[in-house]
Amino acid sequence: MIKKGEIVYGRITNIIGYGAFVKVGDYDGLIHISEFSDNYVKKIDDYVAVGQIVKLKVLDVDEENKKLKLSYKVIHRRRGVKSEVPKFIIGFKSLEKQIPIFIEEQMSKKKITNSIKR
Image (tube, rainbow, N blue to C red; front, side):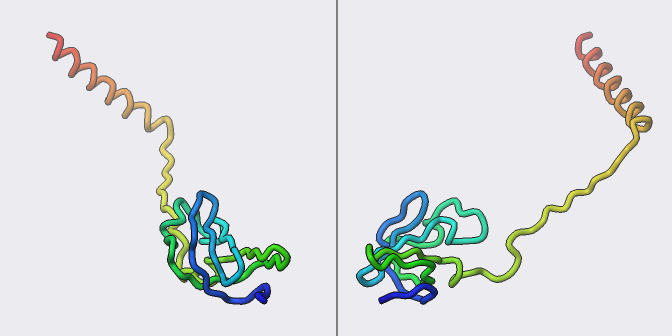
């Protein structure tokens, strides 16, 4: 009899878009896609493969139907930074300073196109 919170080993039997099915003894289990990582999971195949035996934590047990809800991320959590925060340099230039630069750029473009036409 498997209990909630237990650590178990199971064999991945099938992978579908929303999760992976696992066989743990007499029980059938599901690892929902949200239980693979705290980050966005594009492909479950990046974490497990069919036939692989994995260590999992039991989140819930339906003893009557012999079904388990399992978590991969609780056991295999990667330590460290989840992701890097992008660094943006935000600068403000007044319109008063930008207009002459814009006009100069436009005038030089016109000179180039006028000289090409001649």
